[in-house]
Length: 245
Length: 252
Ligand SMILES: Nc1ncnc2c1ncn2[C@@H]1O[C@H](COP(=O)(O)OP(=O)(O)OP(=O)(O)O)[C@@H](O)[C@H]1O
Ligand SMILES: [Mg+2]
Image 1 (cartoon, rainbow over the protein chains, first blue to last red):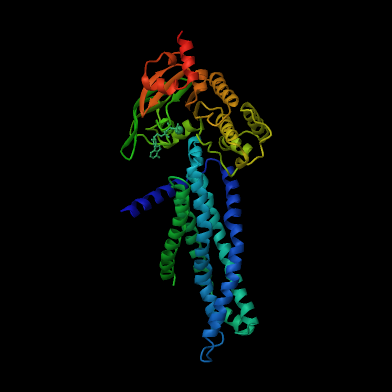
Image 2 (image 1 turned 135 degrees about the vertical axis):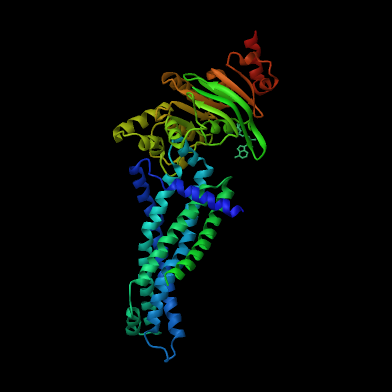
């Protein structure tokens, strides 16, 4: 029963979040700040993970598919599909759920328990919208950038480490990457990215915004934010993958 | 003027405010006193709508804030200044931005006008050269004063202060008390101050309500408080040698 009332509170919070801002100028300022805090600051970890996991994917695939009965382009082709459809959107967003989710939940949770959110409310500011909307928008704006960067770096990492370790030739890899390329995978990847970034930012914001208690509860909220974002994200992945196959 | 009528508030079955009614006039400092845990903060938060009350009415110049729609409530709230017990400064902003925030949000002032207003308010609470400090660099008393500056920056019509001078040295306390009294009279603000500071009670208590275990146990002024026969209030107010002496000398 509790889960239904929580989903209800989540939806009510979202309704308050999506309101016309009182002061668009302040709102834009906040958005720029969040683009930096949630977007640009996430790029380094995305880059590092993408390069090395991309490399691991290619090396592993090349090793598994080394039997001559497979066409030589198969490694490049499978890497591309796997990275574009699952790794870049889903894996990377799972990582970001940890980074961004805990960041958002602990920031809002701390503001809640130190009465900063009450202070906004008393001033007549719609605190939900002022604090949360820029975060959600920033995450959504950054999602295609993250996914594109991640896809590119993963494929690049795969190419670099695949060729210097000698498990695949540069020609076969690049040939496989280009085989039967349509924009469909990219499209699916971007759709996933949008949905996931919305899930991560809004679920964590909900957990942080509704904290009651003290520092201990902020910690709990932050953990819950990450866990629940991840679970919701995985379920969404299954649904989208089935719908857009 | 703020009027509260028959306020009840409980937390999971435990009654915290039990049928409180009172009137807080504009232009005079209204104090809510009571022991720690008596319900002062809950009452104040209920008045501004941060806590929902179980039943009762809260009238801001005749209009009940508990039955207002969101828009009307926002309009009232733009005229509220509030000092939270813990300061509630925005820790993502420096001091000047904290104080300036209500102006940025709700007014069309130019940056110069805003700066002037912020300087003025910070000066009034006895702070200067703190504009660019982060809130984490402030002492407890400084935080309180910045919070007061932020509460008064927008020329509020209603001013709520939850223990504005707890944690301040006696001298600064008196400065803050006098400031609150002055602006209350100057701009005809409806001011409500929670306190358990005896100096404040005797210094600025023009109208005092005493909350004891969630009940309104007594109300009066700083002049009548020394003559009270209310046992709890006497225990609360005149509990040490100094205040006992004070009481005796007043009664003579
Ligand atoms: N969110 C809450 N949930 C449950 N009980 C609460 C909550 N807030 C306050 N209370 C209870 O309400 C009572 C009154 O608390 P309140 O904070 O109003 O006291 P106070 O008079 O402001 O005390 P102090 O002078 O220490 O600030 C206390 O017994 C407290 O335990
Ligand atoms: Mg209190």
